[in-house]
Length: 167
Image (cartoon, rainbow, N blue to C red):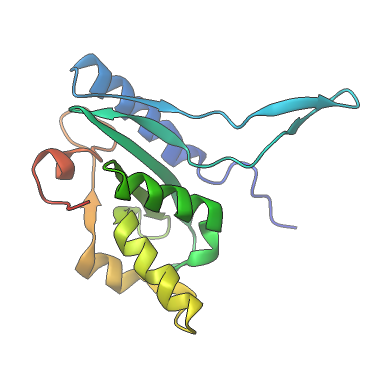
């Protein structure tokens, strides 16, 4: 049986470390969003679906994103992003916010920004019988890769600050 319990934890730790750096330099304030829980028969259970992992503000604009990892070396399965997450990111974008998914290919140790606009197009294509995954090569050709820089564990905001990524 595959254990998915800690999947994505390394990426989330890097993001949270980066968020501390961003806040310290007053670049952005971004927080991890906790999934609401309730007590049921002496156990804590999720009380509702989580929308996205991170929410905040960057230079006066709202920012919302999710972090996903895949161990598949050739593609990112679209099933990794739930429909309600895709809808939230798209609604966030069309109302003026910055929204995206950070996608890490674990095997390649590479992380990319998949904008909500790009994600929405892949979802639309899938709904009309298109691919159910995004090829790794497509990420290389069409997405901004993010890396560690100047002591920031994963400098995922740099492309937005430099105008490289269009939301």
